[in-house]
Amino acid sequence: MRAALLLSALLGAAVPAAAQTVVMSREPQAVAVTLYRDPARGDGPMDAKWPRGYALVTETRTVHLPAGRFVLRFEGVAEGMMPETAIVTGLPKAVDEKNRDARLLSPASLVNAYLKRRVTIRRIDRATGKVTTGEAVIEAGPGQGVVLTTADGVEALGCSGLPEAVTYPGVPADLSAKPVLSVVADSARETMVTVQLSYLSQGFDWSAHYVATVAEDGETVDLFAWLTVANGGSQGFADAHTQAVAGRLNKERNVAPPGPSLPALRLQCWPMDVTSTHPRFDRPVSPASEMIEAQDIGGFADKNVAQRLNRVSGLVLAAPAPPPMIAQQEELGDLKLYRVPERVNIAAMAQKQVAMIDRKKVRFEPVYTASFFGPASSTPTARVLRADNREGKGLGLPLPAGGVALFQDRAGKPLLLGEATLADRAVGDEVELAVGPSVDVRYLIVARPVSSDRAPYHVEVSNARPKPVTFELTLPMRLASPHAGLVERKGQKAWRVTVPANGRAEFDFAVPRK
Image 1 (tube, rainbow, N blue to C red):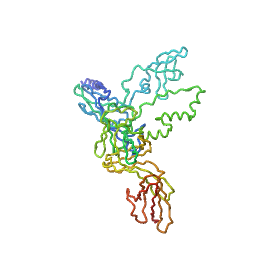
Image 2 (cartoon, rainbow, N blue to C red):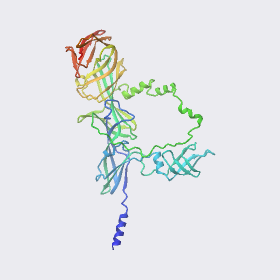
Image 3 (cartoon, rainbow, N blue to C red):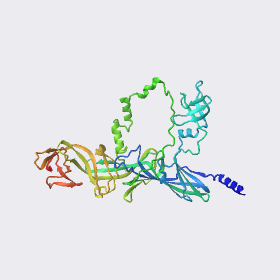
Image 4 (tube, one colour):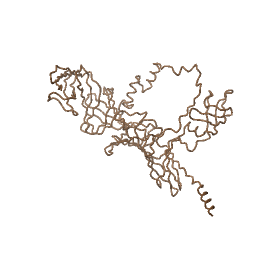
């Protein structure tokens, strides 16, 4: 009796568990993408080729579930998905297990899947020049090349000197052409459900790109801004509800995303070519070829200028006609949310631009500035456009950080004045746009004979323009005596004066020697 019970127990333990049914969800029926800026780049430009921000992706999918235990595979999730953040709702029971499947379909993964298995090799016969096919067994690969056993012996793939390729009888079930997240769960009965998958993903970013056009009279500025979205992953999102969050978030360090499970397939052979053609790999680049390359960049002959304009102004050299679709600003706690009112495609390895701000006739004051650091010969001043971010001045809205392309309207056509960078500015803040140096408004600082307790200086500013200008000299130090003509600016004293047209202004001050 004991022997029979023991045998029964052993047989019961050997019975395998029921196979889990695999349910494939190929693509979502709806998707929403909320983008967050790279928290480490501050006010600098984003790197569109290597975006370091992130996004909250929410996908809605309808799936048919079997009764019992199943594996639900979400195909087509973002490449930079952080699986520890994934939340699945809408299933009959809670999720028991989550897996980020990193085995993607590639030449290397196919070679690895068919190690020690038969494949078909297509090649050109050296004697007849005809395409032939034959069987081969993959003995080694994919690292450092692929070794095959054929009817002719052992050889390396791609080393015959003639075109050849391997074909496979099928794609293994555990390989996917797109990134996959799988979950394990149970259902009491067969049913159709609508589930939502939400997760954070790296490899996204967004930035504002401004186009500021100064009116011909120089009194007002038309301010236009693009919301530029960058997707650095290989997975795109079609017809996505898109929104972007502006502001500073507390973001902890991300877990490093999993790397590729296999190296890229590189077929290495020697010799790769005949020795007479090898020097062509080391030939120097001629000026003519550089000019062709420069002309290919947006039509600019100057390659550096083209790259600089692309980086700062986001491929935008002027504001378009009033666009039919502008992102709508909403409040999100202390942050700002910009919602795109229509669905848009966020393509893989690409950028998308949507209008976000369009304000006409914003009142900016041109100011010519300098800072005192000691004696200075005749020096150009720095011209800035300054405005209060208030509704009465034509603004009165949050301004996310981004690059600014400054233009001057001349006879109805915009001419580039310069480029600037705008930091995040809230309503009520002061907004400054640096235009560049001005050779028409210059200043001179001369040191006068010093005494035992003070070092006097003389400042002279000249204006060669046909209109009066405002000049402002910041004095970032303690003065030897108070001056009634100074103003307080950002916690520092400053000399502010109106310099007449084709005229000059003078100022004397002293700093203590101790």
